[in-house]
Image (cartoon, rainbow, N blue to C red; front, side, top):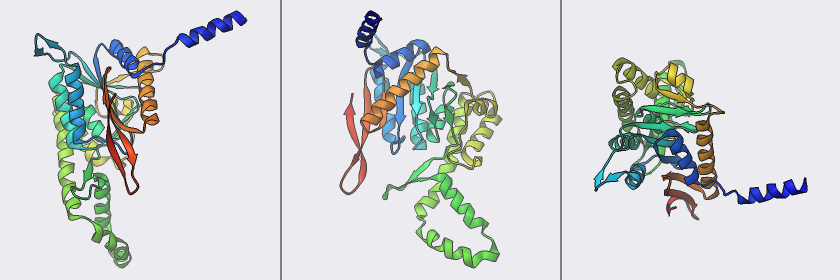
Length: 308
């Protein structure tokens, strides 16, 4: 028994920690694809800078033959994010499409709002049971104040004002008047524009890829995702995504080697990000670019930290 214990200890000591590179390689081999990753944790989100991070990673791994750049046969984006800029998300899809013959998205846990839009531009969405998409609720950021506001919250407030009962006009006015006075005209004016843009982006992507044979369904799904789901937090699981919205979903389940590889890589990323206060990470098997949260005496911010 003692001998067996010693052998077990030696075997344990020989094991090397699983690295991000190990996790990515395992997933690439199972998927027969090239993997790039994009992961955010609040307050990190998808921004215009995210597009260049994706481009840098694509350039780093793009195959070249005799100086000529070739497209990936299959490109998978390992994506986990609560959302961000709708324009940046749309551009990320267009960029990935320029680099690949086939473009898919792997969602380990969640791809909400602008991240859902990225999924709509894929050929296939890979989802374990816990994974979720959500309504497309873009973030409106004031150009000078820098305050992010979900578009849906603006819509909800405007609808509240429109629905007020004349019999309680005086009472409601006392509540709403201070709020209305504080409304920024730029934010209100931008709301309807960005909602139309979001719906148009969703329709364009769906009608070009997953629902290219059914333009009416593409319009319906785009409308529902941008305008008809009441809650920003509403979770669209893989069954609803496939059955209600006709999205092409690849289910992966416990016991599948692909499920294990996705879970393993996500755990590695999450632990690394939590240990280093990283709120945004974009990488490949060989390199990871990231941003960290910092706390200054008078404010909190985001510091582009470096490359690993």
